[in-house]
Length: 258
Image (cartoon, rainbow, N blue to C red; front, top):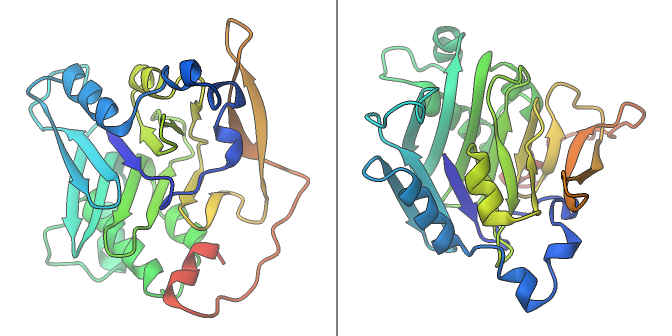
């Protein structure tokens, strides 16, 4: 899967961008713009990929159900409901119980539609904190949600390490999220890093662990095999705490993760 969001709608940690690759025309040319990244994805999967683009600079791309292996090592879904779109890779072992929990029994539901419903519950001021909602998802999964109404981005990766997920910065500053390392490296140069397992990201709320929601995230410098600095990796800072406060204000405030 591949997701691209303009820098005005997604706000990743600044450490994700490698300083060496953000200044100078020759350096910037090594990175790709969103259109080039989409073409690279389609070229890598000729005849088996599709994409959706949105005003504001957002784009989502995935593989169709008939893509050959090894492209489809894991189940891939792309669904939408009421202007909310979800790219989902993997599976949920407790899908049936979550369907009942969200009152979706009797409806045709898969993992991507369930995640959309969970997102909408959070967005519309559901009773649970965001970290608990994502922690309730059992299995190996990675997903990206895009709300075309609000421009919000919501992504998460399961804690079991069963699936790869990467994120990085394109030439124009757009945020790129994908599960194919070579495409990410070719698109973002040194400004890419593994998405941390057991974590979730919201375009306004930032990066946070859903396994350890009271702990802050710490940026760790990365150096490649050539000794070059890369975009930082992130892990839970075991010695820090996040001060939790009750949710107040507009419906959008769920992104504060409280």
